[in-house]
Image 1 (cartoon, helix red, strand yellow):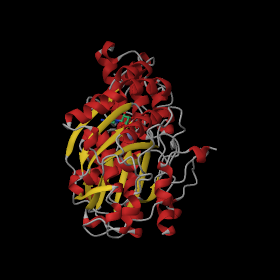
Image 2: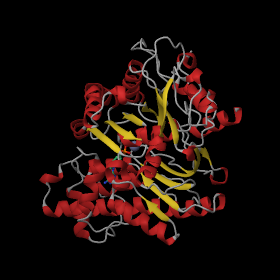
Image 3: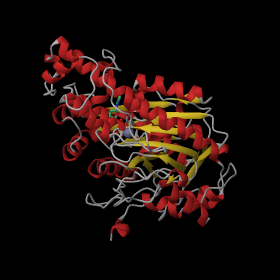
Image 4: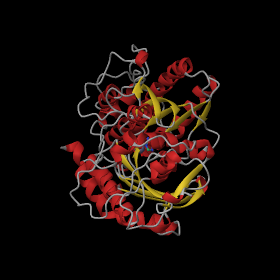
Length: 479
Ligand code: KG4
Ligand code: ZN
């Protein structure tokens, strides 16, 4: 039932043949304006059979001109969590526009993302955000080559808003549509800012919901070296910030980073997670508990009794920091700094080991990409830069605006896949509002590195979609 109703996004990767136009030729096809007499739009067939610079007569009704990759213009839409984002990007990497509408008031009110509220907030602004992205790019939808949209992982209710908008637009303007993996987009945006970045490379992707260490062999081919067995680092930042009474309107991470600068990172000896597990997986639930206990001033090692006393005073720490005494503020800053030191140390240790593993698989790797919301943190960047240099690699870290959720990464990943012929035909114009879209809330990016399987494993395996890598690799084998 579900699969028969699924959108064509799910089928594109499975059934479409690999194009014969190599990515290195950097040539892609531009779509034609709507042609009502054409019953079926078959771009991948065309891409797969024409590696020359001209199209055969039979394809002319479907493709107007063959243009270079540089002439592609793709709209990217992102609504997987709490940011409603859209951007227009050209095939040569030029960012024509970027719009992000954040749910600051909701974050501040609930101290986190409430799916139903977030869905409503997305629905309220999605049309405006997309329109603004087109306006800022000085374009209309008719100028677009394709629409890319995040289909997972993320919150179903939220993903749905973006996918609905993308399909409506693509249907109305007869544009191909590309379903995007949110975490792949976080990784690939690094190739937009660092044009020298070639596969294979490593990536550490750190956000509110994910902690991933991957080896990116090729576009659509990822090996998962490590993941979190419980919470992601961004979630730990957000919870700690909330408990410390910080301003959550920009999410907890930036506020905690700021406060941590005032604190002594050695004042509280939180223990580093998963020391006994010699793998590349992550865990932040235990550290969260340690922080909570520290705030409640139980079960912690404090260097001086003054700090202990003031922690007792601030045990109800959700009192806003703005109304804290200077001593109380200092205690909170010490907790923030101590938390951050250990949270990031955990990343450093796992990256060190992952580099070792990755080199066994791909001795030629030269880069470690660090992306996702938490990668906008300056302390995180500095510490990981150290790890990378120690291992004679180069760090590629997108600018903060491209680390946190954005439409540019979605549009760019769309361009990368489009050029490999991985996209769907335009949806029907009369698609019903209740259409059951192919959304992938739990969607792994790569296949797990067999030698790196952890004994400490997450039990949350229900309703997981086959990984992006397995889908693409299966389709390549069918050809
Ligand atoms: O990638 P992202 O924008 O959304 C998700 O895909 O989750 O990441 C959001 C996460 C939040 O947990 C937020 O607190 C964290 O990234 N974050 C930061 C910083 N900026 C955002 N964490 C630490 N320091 C920051 N400067
Ligand atoms: Zn993200």
